[in-house]
Image (tube, one colour):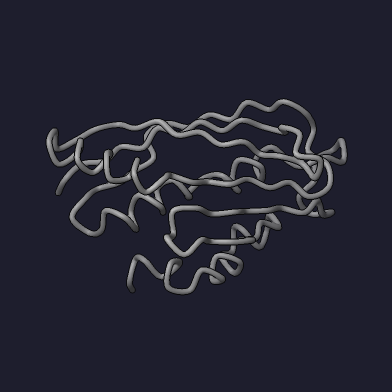
Amino acid sequence: MDKRIFFKYPKLLNFYPPYIGAGIRLKDLNESKNRFHIEMKLKWYNRNVYGTHFGGSLYAMCDPFFVFIIYHYFGEDYIIWDKKASINFKRPGRGTVHAIFEIPLKKLEEIKHEVDQEETRNFDFSSEVLDANNEIVALVSKTVYIRKK
């Protein structure tokens, strides 16, 4: 199976079992495929005992997208892994929450150049999970390991 299937058929992400179970949906993927817009509606099956978004679901909606973007840009000649992640919860998530994961094309070009020069590197990325009022629900930080094969 082609590892880039989610870029060929991005709506397949909406049928990925962990995302179905958490109520996570791809709202948009831009033409350059370096920007994902993800949302999650609050449902009976993804709320915690306080009636707000379950923290694990909030993190799950943020998990793979920086790796996906880098993998799509770099291709098969690189190993790309999440190395470290953290989520800092700022306020309870109520209603629909969303997040945008984007790495500008110029930054991807710079990252690739650095990895090609040094063969292996770690890079830090971050994003915000926002509620319907665009207030911050959580801050997500990711460290991605990239190495030439």
